[in-house]
Image (cartoon, rainbow, N blue to C red; front, side, top):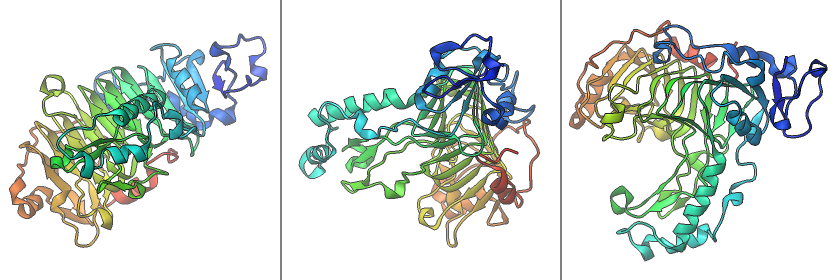
Amino acid sequence: MNTQVWHGHAMKKSAVLIGCTALVLGLTGAATDAEAGSSRDLGRQVLGANDGWGSEGAGTTGGSAADAEHVYTVTTWAEFKAALAAGGDAPKIIKVKGMIDAVAQGCEAFVTDGYDLQQYLKDYDPAVYGNDKVAMGPQEDARVASAAKQNAEIKAFIPSNTTIVGVGKNSGILGGSLQVFGVSNVILRNLTIEAPLDCFPKWDPTDDDNTGNWNSEYDTVVVYGTDHVWLDHNTFTDGRYPDSERPVYFGKVFQQHDGLTDIVRGSNYVTVSWNRYENHDKNMLIGNGDGLAAIDAGKLKVTMHHNRFDGILQRSPRVRFGQVDVYNNHYVVTEEQQDDYYIFGVGISSQLYATDNSISLPPGASVGKALKKWNESPLTAENNYVNGKRTDLIAVHNAEIPSETLQSGAGWKPTLRTKVDHPKAVPGIVGYNAGAGRLR
């Protein structure tokens, strides 16, 4: 057994390595059964047949075929990035042990070229700078340079034929942005991932009808130009930095988070199953531009099932172009969010098929706001339950918001589905089984 264990310090000795050649990068060793635990089995598991769009064709197998030379256990961000870079596109399994921090040194480590937030606020105060031009000048230049330094550090690019799994119940990544970018065949499972915090949001005075807004970078997981992806039993959260605790400058929230899971730019054949999305604003964007038909038309085929969205505000998902199958998810909207929330965003040429979901709303919340119309795109929304009662979401939306009348009928019917549970049972089933640490 030559499984690698990277600990960022001296190589761990093990009897099983006697007579074996040490492996790459000088940070190698053998995983004990206790270290590998159930994650070894998770790393070898593949997406099941007919389990959503990710099972199309040859399916999604990730790094399940990895030999012993390409199995790694990592405990630091540097080790994680090194494991990703090792071995090219050969199948690999990376086991994340414990919570590893992509920004352990804090935002101060990225500050460069004289950037100072207080000076930035003085320079671009609308009372001084106005709202008729974008931010320019020394502080904006310094912000851009500092942001570039953070960008290089916190993004991790995942190669083809890779499986990344958390070891045990409390493993994952804090503040890193996982880039599934222009590759194929990737699996992420059993990870708790805290959304990256943008240390240097940009103030755009001209945004939001010339009232200005703060704009942030860094999606937690971005699937970009990639096919065959399985995201399963993960927990996505703002964690230590909820939006509710962000400061307000110029009358606008100092927005430091972007999306939790964005699937964009011609990505295809993705299954998102048994995950938890917690207390976040922008959850999932499928397709990120109305003018991208040449890239996205006929693609962006995504299945979402048995996920729990708890304390959500919008984009769960927002869809452009794709045939997106959404079933057996549980959506929980809080009292604080009820005025601004929406769940299903209907965008240009989208073909959303949303059935058999459960929605929990606080008393007095508008049911019609569960749907949001951005473009004229028919959808199917059948057998969904709101607060335990079967509800025709389209009919209620059209009655409550006649200015956004939606048409029924997505024009296709999913065939790649696992067992469909009754929507009344979904809150219990998903609540018990979804998220990191719940695989049994």
